[in-house]
Image (cartoon, rainbow, N blue to C red; front, side, top):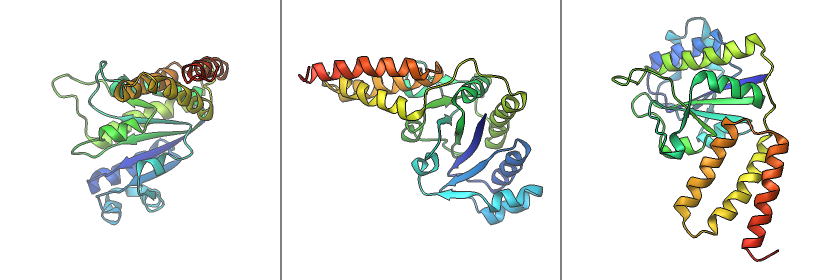
Length: 233
């Protein structure tokens, strides 16, 4: 089973922050982390009802990278998704729940600012992008509503205790594979395309729930290819 870490980046509204604290209690969130909140935690307490202790006990991080430390899987959320942009190829909340079951460990779900969401650089910090399907005419949800939908799907998956169809490879294995992929891609001499290729591979591996054996075999192949390109056999 997995743990849920809810990460809020730059949350701006005290009302939203108070409501989200209540949602964290509603759906058994294990950790609440605030990254550079603009909203006053003290001011949000009056909207937190019985979840004041949750809000008072929230961790505060100075960067998103710090908030993601130790997570086995990280998922950023956004209302903007594009199939032709490797950083914005989305999963939906139910797909995220299925992947979380396979990943185990601590699953960090990241939500951005009410006004501007997450930056492209922040989205690139995560393994997956999650988008909630909504009307094309008005796809943007209120922050607390979006949090409720995603947390419900994660709660439902944990409560049903469905056995994952396969167990995902650990983060260390995946990062090693991506390091070899980066070495190989960099040899092409185009840094932008190299980055895009590695990011695309990262998202493919996590969405496909790549196993330890699959990642190990791919890592072997890419490491040998990288060595040969570098002239080391």
